[in-house]
Amino acid sequence: MSVVTNPLVKMDVVIGENTRQILSETTLTLPVPAIKIRDIVARVQDITTEVIENKIIVQGTLHKQIFFVGTDNVVRHIAEDVPFSTFLEIPGALPGMDVQVHPTIEAVIPILLNPTTLLQKVVLEIFVKVTEKRQINIALGDGPLIRVNEVVGEGTVQTLEETVVTLNCPAIKIDAIDATVEDITFELIEDKVIVQGIIHKQIFYICEDNIEHHQAEDVPFSVFVDIPGATEGMDVQVHPTVEFVAFTLETPTTLRQKVVLELFVKVTERVQLQVALGTGPLVKTEAVRGENTAQFLSETTVTLPVPAIKVREIDTRLENITTEILEDKVIIQGTIHKQIFFIDTDNVEREFTELVPFSTFVDVPGAEDGFNVEVVPRIEFVGFNLLTETELEQKVVVELFVKVTETVQILVEEVIVPPYVPPYIPPNDID
Image (cartoon, rainbow, N blue to C red; front, top):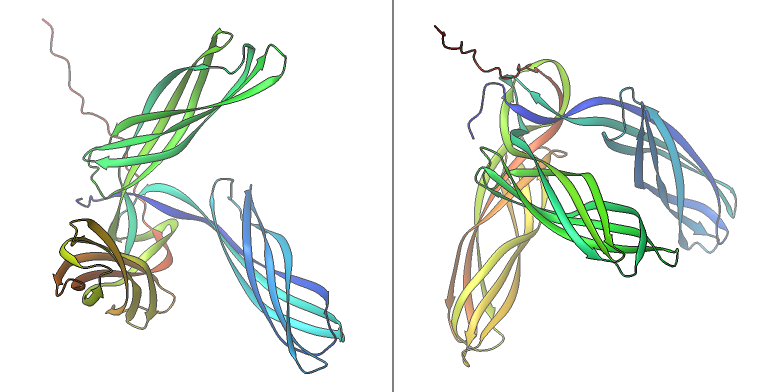
């Protein structure tokens, strides 16, 4: 995709951030008398947030593992979970915005009041950032190279789904029909996005016994949206809206329904742009610090469970990829998952699975601990040779593309692009 002068990108615009410290004090009764507290390991878990206007409510659990020495000089362990709740003022925050919470345990102070009573003071710092996804046109320049989602195109389509359902009992009244959209899938082809899903309906109606009954109905749908420039491999976001639900009780057991569904589809592509720094907005983005590609060869010999006369194919994929960053290097580990399809001596096709762990590294100058890593693996070649009826030699060539980025906040230069106005063409003179 060619880069335009002022590309339209979807970015996380920073609304605001704030920090708050809280002190958690708890008193715990130990199961046996203690002479000393050896250590308290604390961590924050199960964090939830709620955004209200100009405020963020943060809740979570302070999980503690307490190690103490009993009167018999044996080290014992006890766990404690302490819930906490606080709020932070962030002007401009509104429901629906994105929240990132970074908790830090600053201090853990144990005080053994008596052999079985432990007072604990934990100082917890909560850092909260609020962002909102926006589409902005940005100026290119000599600023940092960043990874962004460039908007390829977007479009809206409406569809009318009409169905007739037979009710389980004769109805005298339809109370309500609640409709939601579920199980959305999409397929991207050139200049089009095909969207499929299920309209899930819950029908509430009153039968002749004057009791309200419930009946569910699932209606599949399939539509497409024209998005010029869309190609396979790009990212797609689908936002469905049930616009209208109408129904007619044609007979006591025959219900006709009409649902108008609107689908908003956006197609984006991950690109790298060198942007111009400016006066705003302040955005949270990924600055590219380095990238590189490396290859390695995996050679294994496996013993098949039964004699084979032929190996038909070997399906190979990479799984469970993990990374670790060292200075100027990225260590990559994972598993080569192979499904071996072979013909045995009875001319029956069989399958055999082999898992091969791998570990390698890729030089990425500029990489530092704490940066983010993106790995794009690719199987370049799979070769095999049946040495004997049961011994299979295999060679797999793997390519690993590694990109290292750093999460940064920068002020970009936004460009206000006026709406397109078609040129004025004067009407023909009429004599």
